[in-house]
Length: 594
Image (cartoon, rainbow, N blue to C red; front, side, top):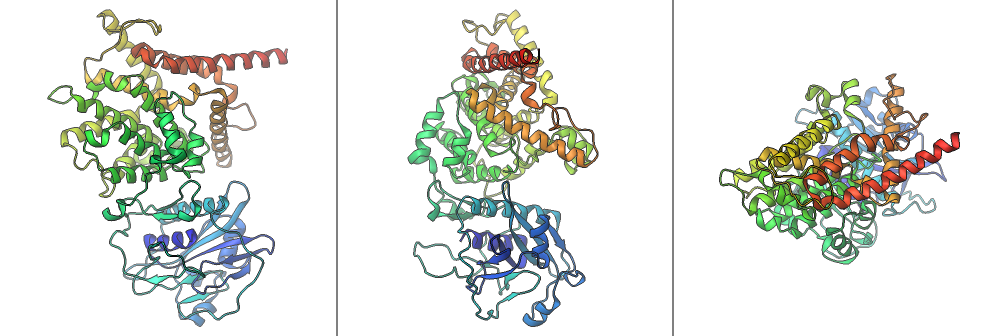
């Protein structure tokens, strides 16, 4: 049912006349489809036609002129009366096992029949393909039964050709699955012609979601601006019961959280679940008059912007950063200390603290939104569109926050619509400020700035001169600029938060980072570019340089934070413990070489 839903919603959102999904039966070396309008399982040789080409090469193929491509069979159109103009075919890929099938879209819809598939269409379909592949490998979609191909004739509203497609013909209006009323029907799923919902727009992104341990309750949700207000009222709150509820309750006051575990128990919805939970639990929804359903949609949309293909910069990382940012603000008292960051003309009030908390959580959530697993330097060297758009300056960070803010103001994600305009301006300004300062190129300046502020405050008797844990002096910012400087350092600490985790979990993240960096190095080699530092898999990677990295950048960062807010000392203790472990490893390596 997931494949049916993915196919039809992709068809509606991209705007095409027909769509199909084929999976690879390795035993028989065939592509087969059970997602079709015939109610039968259909098969073709695994290398046949356009679908076979994509399944074999693993490369996306866009054919602007079907009749001009030798792999296309004109006989199919002659038999069915369907006129194929253009085709987009995307492979279903998994990390282990390669290509497991293909997804196809036919005939981009336009008033003059001249529309072609765009790079945006390709990226969009690749997201669908990635999610479909995940569903299959997670066991949500059954694997093929023994080969039993029905010989029934094709119905008049479908066609099946040698080019490898079984497609549902477009009716008078886009075809959608009727919403599940709870009744179960035997036999294959049925496609019904129903009026096009008002919420189906070209606004894009869609995804399937699955509640942990509830494979029978799979649902397909279209995030903003594609979800209606009424539908949002039925959105589930996983954090209200069961294992997820216990996990979140424990994580709320804990200095560490196993993001990998949260991903697992929420069905890969760690970020949206955690974000919604924290905003509710902290009272931000009530204090700031947030729309709860739009809030959840916003976090879901942001979550979908994190690619599972990235070993490190993914949704689990965003959830981990959000958790530590929350704890720093909550238990470390940074939200109260830095409340002046959102100070308006009326001075500091309770709303300011809530705004700081919301800005901190949002900044953590979006700080790597739509990250492509490569550095700013790589984007510049390859003349990527992001680097061009932002003039080679902080291309990643500028895109993360700009794209997130664009998502926020979509009607169905605009959870701050009822917020006071002045508060919204403060929130957006702080959000942008925090995210752009996560750029590692800004690291030294960010730390030096807060250090200078603390030195001046110490001279005036307003702050401590060291990060000593028994220090009685608590820094209280006197200006919004001082408060923002503190929040920038806090988010940078949260961004490097795996360094403060238990050793085993910390090592998982180091390996994830190393894997992503090596992948960039591989791309640089393919492009004939110099391989960036630590990104050549034939040389030592990030795990071999942790002592130097922590000495020069990490420890000064966390010490500065603790000097400003002594209540955050536990994170420095944890970082120091891991640092000492790395020193021991380095010493052992040196002894072994000698």
